Image (cartoon, helix red, strand yellow):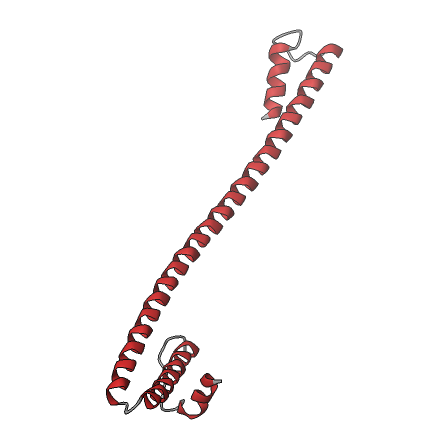
Amino acid sequence: MLGLCLISSWYFFVAPRFSFQLNVSGAAALLVFALFGMAIVAIAHELNITVERLLAERKHSDDLARKSMRAEEKLAELNQELLHRIRNIFTLAISIASQTSRYAANPAEMADALAQRFRSLAVAQELLVANELAGADLKASRSGDAETIST
């Protein structure tokens, strides 16, 4: 494209006009025109590269922002699930205390029975977490887990 501009400038603007004759001043003018044209093309090329790099960085930044938003949404979901599970555990603890109090002969027996049942509840929760909440075999895990919790 620059070559076409150079040829048309030579023909239309360099004396003598409308011919391809060339004198020293015309040659100097065409040389300056060509140098400035190459500088403009080089600058345009660098600007194009810079714009492409900035667009790529913007896309990367947008991707990071989307990932961050998804992570925040996931964290909010996990917090809601945790709150739900904590409420369920407290409801279960109240139910255990209520059932235990019905059959305990005295406060000491009730305290021992509650402690044993809460330890079992803690073991069950640990097993669920260890199995990534996919369930757990309580029969296979009865040996030794209560001692782990109580210490």
